Image 1 (cartoon, one colour):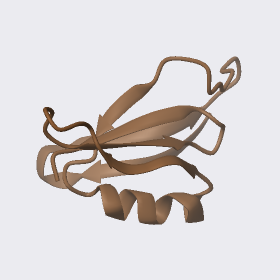
Image 2: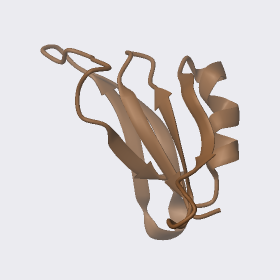
Image 3: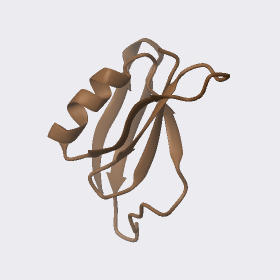
Length: 87
């Protein structure tokens, strides 16, 4: 199993990782899981491509009635992941 930490937040011990293991079948057609970018979306998007990921949709306002922004990325295996941030 290969695990690559991507989201780290020491002050509350929240973290996430991209995990690859036998039997996993990456897909961009599956569920879109959204992660809280906690005001660091620009930092995450800025590092993504150097780590082998890809930006599918850059930081975008959700809509006029909703608070915050979203982005959609692909990880190194091709899975889509959503990001959310209030800023």
